[in-house]
Amino acid sequence: MNPLEYNDTFKHRGMRKKLVQHLREKGIQDEKVLQAIVSVPRHLFFDSGFLEFAYEDKAFPIGAGQTISQPYTVAFQTMLLDVGRGEKILEVGTGSGYQASILAQMGAKVFSIERQRSLYNKAKKLLPQLNYMVKIFYGDGYAGLPAFAPFDKIIVTAGAPYAPQQLIDQLKTGGMMVIPIDDGNDQTMTTLRKLDDGALEIKEHGKFRFVPLLGDKAND
Ligand code: SAM
Image 1 (cartoon, rainbow, N blue to C red):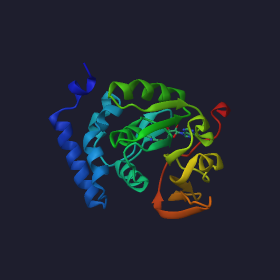
Image 2: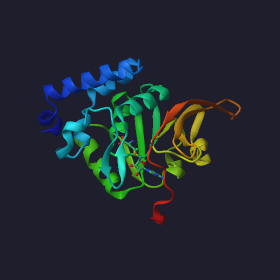
Image 3: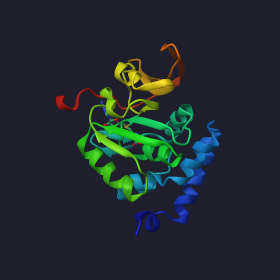
Image 4: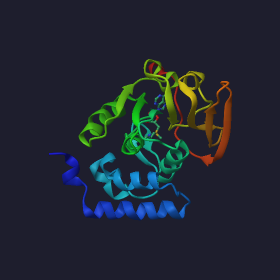
């Protein structure tokens, strides 16, 4: 039997509705995003000892020195991404797999890449169990997934020093990337849209704090 049927209770659903109410009050108004947050059982992306923290609006450790992003940040990035059903989306930084599941819940075809082997292994096992059909890859997100490009959208879920050219190259014309770009202290949430002439339309959307996007996995 699907583990979801055992573990996603009435109480958990109530906690998700409360979280969504909180996100609304913080300014998230995109109903498709809020509906996905109501649907995806965030607590199942936590180790069982920490379930009580799953519906707080906070980032939380997931092992390997990494975190599952704060729900507000997930909602904000997803809102900026403006997900359409059937769109092909690349996520850099699978982590727990929660953000990828939100995108899959919204009907996107999701490809996600993670450089930490233990997190990759865990997400690759968990997501099919929860019926989220995400293609998960172990590798360096700076390089993206050229074999599967181009993508309609790209979302980077770690703080990047800059928008990697290889990722820009993997965007369709008209496509968009959401990426938190580091300014030394925290990150500026940035959207880059690839215009018809190949130029980028760049917009900034405020400050956030992420774990860093790390270099080649072979180096540590
Ligand atoms: N999206 C995740 C989730 O829903 O749980 C949270 C992402 S966490 C804030 C950032 C993730 O980016 C970590 O899992 C980290 O290992 C990963 N990461 C860091 N540098 C990377 C790189 N160069 N390529 C791929 N993943 C990377």
